[in-house]
Amino acid sequence: PLVDSKAMLIYAMENKFAIGAFNANNMEIAQAIVEAAEEEKAPVIVQISQGAIEYAGENCLFSIVKSLADKASVPVVCHLDHGVDFNTVIKALKAGFTSLMFDGSSLPFEENVRITKKLAEIAHAAGVPLEGEIGKVPDAAKGPLSPEEVQKYLTTPEEAKEFCEKTGVDSLAVSVGSAHRMKVQSARLDIERIAKIKEKVKVPLVLHGASGVLDESVVEAIKAGISKINFATELNKAFTNALRQKLTSDPDLVDVRKYGAVARENVKRIVREKINLLNSAGKA
Ligand code: G3H
Ligand code: ZN
Image (cartoon, rainbow, N blue to C red; front, side, top):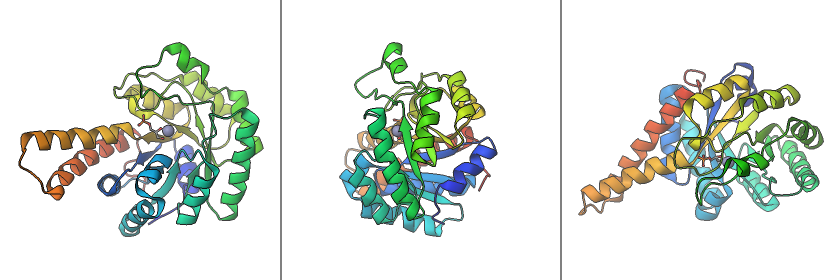
């Protein structure tokens, strides 16, 4: 069924595993995520980014996730990932999303607090939880970041505590050594920092940019207190690589369903792997 993320994330936090939050940009990826969760008996978050909404529309993507969730025996959340505009968060809430994120990490601290707090109040009035972000998970889309660059965006335990107290967020995205859109798995996380943030913050902690993080670092991060882990690039890569290979090996192929199914199967394989890495298999 379609559920909200509040109890799911608290359950993961209390039981020391993490919920996989997987980005869906189209129907095939959404299907792959829910099918993988179903086969692994795992609670799961399907997330739709602001960019995905701009690509496909919030109602279209929500309808796909909802229809898959309604049929699923495992709990499925439809989460807005990186809402950077106030209005996008409101649009997602209106569309029926059962979990929201406002990402004000590019704003000055007080401005981030002000908008996050406002959106938390609105979301809570509708019974929907809100994720916030403090510190900033940087973007490695244009190439690898230097350790100094990653360093300057890291979340401090003090600002994390103050941010949560001032905003009332239900979960918190923190910057602990990962970066968005890394195509190779090479990042190592600042595990000590996660543990220190965890001591000061009561809400579940979220790791973004997990596609580029080494498996052993992901496992340590969960032990240190991370409860939700986001993967987007790994799924996009799995979809695209399978598609590219299929079209190259069969240049006459024009049936969308034939190559769509191949790409979908490959995404499903990756999601199942990640669910096992996060130890959320069998937790539904
Ligand atoms: O919000 C989505 C995730 O943080 C994406 O991270 O680019 O490493 O897959 P990724
Ligand atoms: Zn992210």
